[in-house]
Length: 251
Ligand SMILES: NC(=O)c1ccc[n+]([C@@H]2O[C@H](COP(=O)([O-])OP(=O)(O)OC[C@H]3O[C@@H](n4cnc5c(N)ncnc54)[C@H](OP(=O)(O)O)[C@@H]3O)[C@@H](O)[C@H]2O)c1
Image (tube, rainbow, N blue to C red; front, side, top):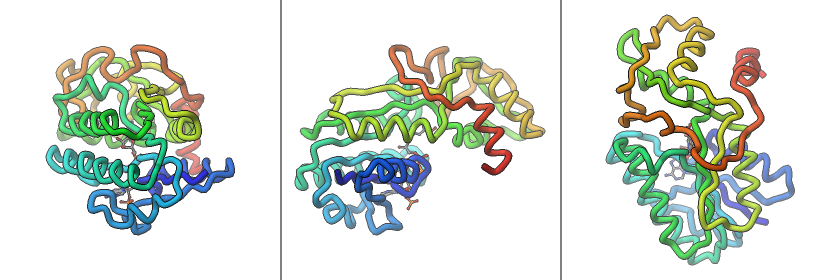
């Protein structure tokens, strides 16, 4: 089955292309540096020819409010129109657990807009909601940094390994469209402030992690369950400590 992976050169996309290929699928990586730009429409019709399914794991190069909104609405609109013309029968997109609960954040408003376009389109779809990737932990800490201080809210946190995300998304794309969402999260739930205090200590990072109920996550204040699945969820197998140990050993 031909599956086009939009953002197929990125963190999750490249793992997905490899995994789908190992299972005998024709997985095609589509991104600006392979000649496919969903924002401008360049190369989109050509790459979709003969495809049964499309997985969109692209991301906006800029997280600035207007830029990210423009990215997810224009690229999703272009993609869905091209998929309808090409006869694609399954659109899969990767989004974030809690997206619908975080409209205060410009990034999450853009993900809500992306999901709305997908839900309204005639193409059968599946939306995978994942929690924060282990690989994104450093960026979260940097975004929450003010001088030598990292402000983190004392709320539930359940990050997941990129490898577990890619495996779950691959399973969804080869299955029947859900016309709904599935949520995936890591195997361990902890407190966000404590997680970052321990993690920065393990990096020998001199920044101090301060617990702050009003600390913002990419612009949004969080409540206890903002970032974790509240209903059924598929859990990954890789634990953060094991992943971090392997990453430190360069494996
Ligand atoms: N980070 C998290 O913790 C998290 C959690 C849950 C869900 N998600 C979602 O997961 C998705 C993938 O994230 P990621 O970290 O794997 O992304 P990433 O590593 O930043 O990769 C983004 C991909 O999008 C491509 N891209 C950028 N502009 C494009 C365009 N105009 N047309 C086509 N492709 C374009 C990039 O191509 P180039 O390399 O050529 O620029 C790259 O292949 C995002 O939608 C995000 O919302 C993230």
